[in-house]
Length: 180
View 1: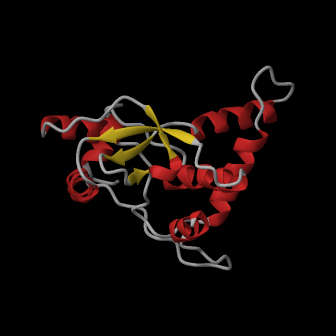
View 2: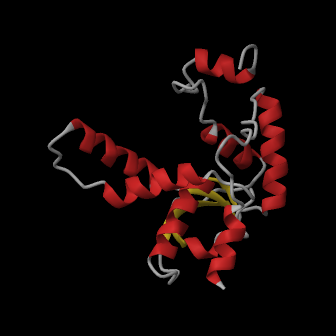
């Protein structure tokens, strides 16, 4: 961030930086798309089995954590702060993901993965939906626009984590094999 457009926007209060130093630039990206005449839909439900991944490796521990939260969080009223925090986290996991008009996920792979895992655990019936914001462009066009936007804003993309003790599975491939 140092010296970038994003840093200036954080200082101006137009972008918020989280505790990890990351910024959510979705609104800025949406404005850029609108300048180019490309619209993003309001959140709408879409079946998780109809969505396709644009990244081929997901971290199983992240997905397992999200599945646990989604399965065990209970709605208010809560008796403890821990229960309240878990509910709030489960609600944030239900935030819409961003997909292309051809059904490719641009942002939200791990949340999608968690719901796919729940679908598989449920017998793989393909009846689990999630909220999406669908962008009126193809995945290929959007990846190009996203990369350009990231460069223009002086933002860094998250580098792929080095494989530590945990094996990172190509989750999308596993899912599609299990659906057959």
